[in-house]
Image (cartoon, rainbow, N blue to C red; front, side, top):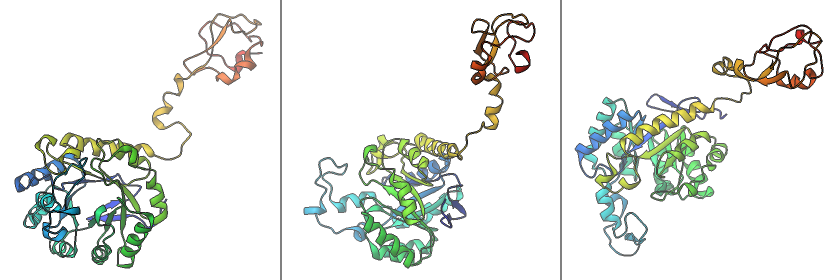
Length: 353
């Protein structure tokens, strides 16, 4: 158990003793419609998620208006093949003038709302509207000036670990803590879209927790909820997943995003996974105790007379459990009955010579 590593965001405690903190990531799934963005807030709230997360940048603050070389997505296996970075982020970004309304609508629905800033101007803007925490995206975890700036606010900081080496993570974490971050969460992340379960390497989660002595979760881009539940079993206290109204609607992130019913199931199943961890226990639980009487025990399978030898022909090991325990059976066989007993009686030591 970690000491003093719990995190509190807008009053919600994040720790091993609290149910998983589920973050519904809107990303670009608003498809440039404020009405749709607000409906996504409703979906997140209805699902039971704890928080809604946005992304705060503009095309101008995240890339240049260039259309050659690495400014183009040239990987034919990419969801965004053929896009320039500029065109992609123009489609995906959340207009800053929407943020306050989204934050307020989320609050009215009982959702914590925060964002991923992608540069220092985004941090300043989010500070002006009262963001309670900051998330550093995987693609920004090498952006040391941004980490310094966000950490200096004193707000809880969440850093995704996608693509980062251990030395890069150490630099990011050391920078955050040196710059004023007192509450830190690392999210294990595989930055491919969708991510493969085989490349998720969730066993890194307990290692990250031990190495950096902080809360650790999962930023999950795999399909379905299996990886998220496995992460909880390995000690994750936070799960973040992209979600949309319908994958059929399209959008920059829709193909690997959860639909409303799946998001609701994520909340339910991760909490069940957390509840199931319990503690180390080798005794019957309260609910199991009433079933102890249905275990096997030793019974008479035939009527026996006083002095008759007990054998496998007149005794047996069956349910229920009101007779002697089965491990006594070798000691019972060959002894004689201490009285006359009928078939179906549970055997006990007082019945044996």
